[in-house]
Amino acid sequence: MTELPRASFNERAPARAAVAEGDGIAVPLRAGAERAGDHVFWWRLASIAIVCGAWEIAGRIPINYAFPSFFETALAFGRMIADGSLPKAYVSTLQPLLLGIAISAGLGIGLGILMGLRRTAEWFGAPVFIVLQSAPVAALIPLITFVYGIGLTSKTLAVIALALPVIVLNSYKAVRNVNPSLVAMARSFLASRWQQILRIILPDASPLIFAGLRLGIAAGFIGVVLAELLITPTGIGDLITYHRSVADYAEMYAVIVSIILFSAVTLSVLQKLEIVLFRPEQREAGA
Amino acid sequence: MSAATAPAGAVMANGASQAIVSVRGIGKTYDGGVEALRDIDLDFPAGALTALLGPSGCGKTTLLKIIAGLLEPSRGEVRVSGRPVTGPGPERAFVFQDFALMPWATVLRNVAFGLELRGVPKSERRQRARQAIEEVGLAGFEERYPHELSGGMRQRVGLARALAVEAEVLLMDEPFSAVDEQTRRKFQEDLLHLRQVERKTFLFVTHSIEEAVYVADRVVLLSRRPGRVSQVIEPQIDRGASPEDIRRDRHYLDTVEEIWRGLRQYVD
Image (cartoon, one colour):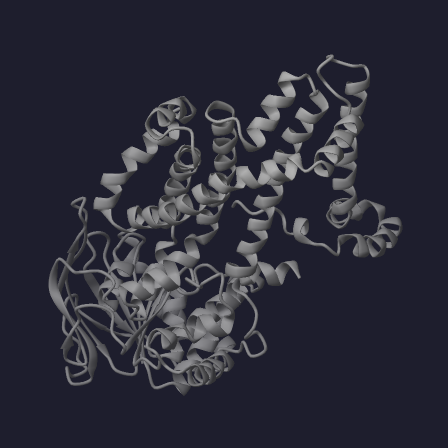
């Protein structure tokens, strides 16, 4: 479904690669797929190296006077860590982000599950969230500012506006797509409605719920950056705006790349957490 | 020693006292107006293995699910040990066609699931589950997950789960239809062995004539939709013989032929 291939979680890949290499030489025809799996780490490193290399070259040509090279950006990143401006910006950005995501996750998963379980909740809630999900919510952000000003509330609301619909709708679909045969099984072995929900429906729905949570968090990142660009110049948004205005493009790119990396790392940590907590059968397969 | 047959719709000669499951006037019409079953009257004797056989779409699975209490009949009544069925009960256990195993749980937990739901303490349910796992020949696989098992082994888990709750009646919905032919034969032999050891009543849905005749004491033939009882056949086969001998046995082959003649009219 939404899971990445198992090998991607395998931290021991480099160690095992050495063994597979011997095999690969002995039986070169068979080895293709297996070696790709065992060499995941190196392929990834190569992928990153190629992207950074292309960036470096593009920055040196340069394709645009406002496009810094990779090394300039990396140096700018170091400078901003050293002078404390980047950590400070993150502290300020993380507040509405964490708050918004916590609210969206709690409320969204709860509502989604309820909509999946009860027809009336579905009829009541589904239209609202389907409209919200397809609407260009970014256009509403200035409106939020009118009502709630430029403080933490507005930014938190911007995060929720982007994160909540996707979390609700995924949780709802997750519950709807639970294997009906498993529910019938639980019923035939005398499960109460609560036992059906807690022991069958939620565990079976958890991969899709988590997929929704990951999408929601990604949307939350968009929400918080948008809010900081559009509403109040603080945190990450302020750093981007400021460095653009004084033509420190290397700094600007360093901030942008850092938020992308931060978002990616957060999401993959969440995925690992899901497997550790809820999917013992995959944990075993990956070990 | 030819196969004994009874006319359609007749109440079984085995006295009502022996019938552990009795079905009276069951009819089922689905919401869309499709009539799946009409006027089913059947008695299932205690300790026997009865096969429900019929063309696809004849409502055999519907009937089994009504007996299990998973589906509400539109008309009629099912009684198990004299008590009317209003839902699933502890005296019945179901074996699912698609195994219905929890992918996130080990074999042991899957097998113990029925006991877990009933609040049996962990150590006791583990011990009973281990016993059931051994009975179906899966000892050593307790800590595996379903995706690590073959189709045949998964169905053994489903069977062990039904055995673990110690129900009197085992309801099996085409249990072997999703496994390959070799596994299927082995399974049928194991089922025969199992019913000699366990004093249980088996209701077994299948679309395979050979399977029905091979394993069942009684074969109930259902007609095409709306399903009705068209014939009840009791194959007189010496179960003590080896599987090879049974499959070559004259009575076995004659009964298969007889059922095929009965079913042929429903095949376009």
